[in-house]
Image (cartoon, rainbow, N blue to C red; front, side, top):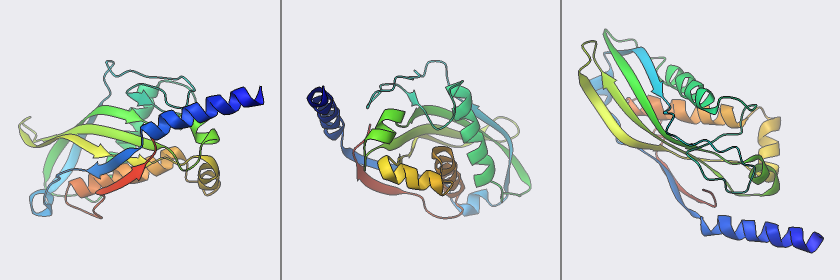
Length: 201
């Protein structure tokens, strides 16, 4: 039995290793000179029903949405709330005279399963992709970018245990990351763009 479990685990690791790749947080973004007079009015986050949700506890679950950082529930609603919290935090300092509306269309929010998080080590990626559109009060598009990537290393094994002990839950880490991405996309704060190699999916 032990040998069979070892073989299954080894096969799963091989599958994940085959998915080892280069990941990135990457976007074009806007210039501060263009956004200094903006303040965010309405925020709309679309998480379409067409995105597949996978609750399977395998090492490498397929699906557009794989999220285990909160109790079981409406994963689309959880993802929407994560984006809303991130946008509000990331745009908190925008207090210009021109009100603009922000729409985000989520394309992928693929984290790691509980099994991968607890059984593996030095593996896992939160793979996050979305489109962003800014409109004025008349509904005219004044800024737009498709395919914003906001990938983030997902902790597993002892790294996950240590992070949780410090209050750095999966949700906390993602909200911190996304809020920085949104701030910098609007030409503010730290440049969040990066590239990294990681075994993940």
